[in-house]
Length: 105
Image (cartoon, rainbow, N blue to C red; front, side, top):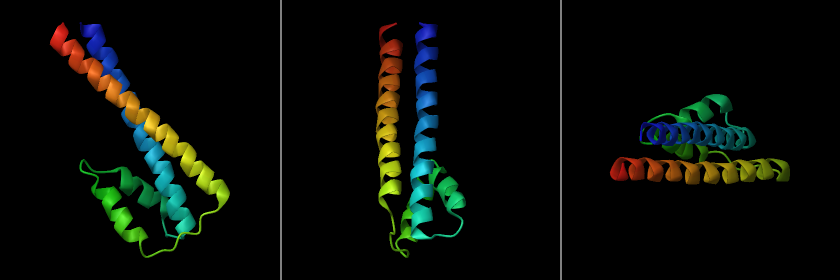
């Protein structure tokens, strides 16, 4: 029982790190292409907060800047989006495993 709980929590933790990393990369590429100053700072602000306050602030701020994205950066964003979806599915599986372990063991 304890090993299943540890494994499911480890899956959730690694998935959360993957989600934060890929969201950081997506925001950084978008901010850089829009010409927003301090793109790295905005990418770190976007992944912060428990209720996605940083992402909401970034989305409000980015409306002022037009999008000048090229094909190469669009492919990078699409790559990180796919990885983000994979990590979201993985964290869901980790939570289901955790709940099943707690209920059935």
